[in-house]
Image (cartoon, rainbow, N blue to C red):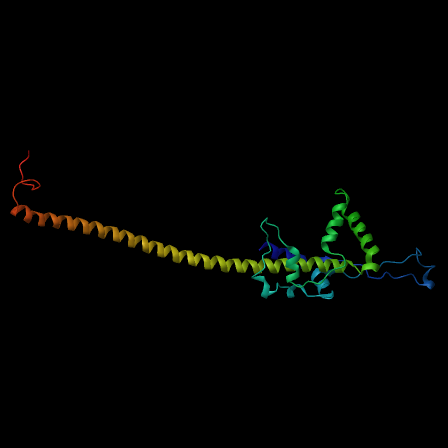
Length: 229
């Protein structure tokens, strides 16, 4: 399944995240510092799987749809729209102060020709501006996106298994019905043949019995021995 491959690849991606709180230049180092503003330090790169493991909430391999409600939940409405929010709810995913979808909305407002690094810088500035008020961090956004991907993967797998079971059961029922149809068609053909044989035999026997009656009857109409007028 392609979605499972996407999750496996995403879990192994390396992400370099800045520290949540930038380190300020200490007074006794001011003369040595090239600039008198906070310095940003960068954490060692982590895989997406490691980031999720360190973030509050379930690990990627722990995300599964609620078994009690999966069979009754229909993720696609009559117009073919998928209710992703309900799928995430089934997986009991934690809320994020700034969701992966909101990042996508932000990226959609940026010019398409803007270089990737400029887009990353813009998003970084937005996240930093929101950090104190909402507590949003890049690793929280990465965790939100990867957990939602894991929830979609788990639900798609669960739904596929249910669909496979349904199809197998339906195909078995169809095979049984087809066998019954064949059996009934054979029975119909047999009944028709017996009917033909019976009518043929009865007709032949009636002709033999009629010969007896004709033998003893007068040679007048309707006797077959009556002379033609």
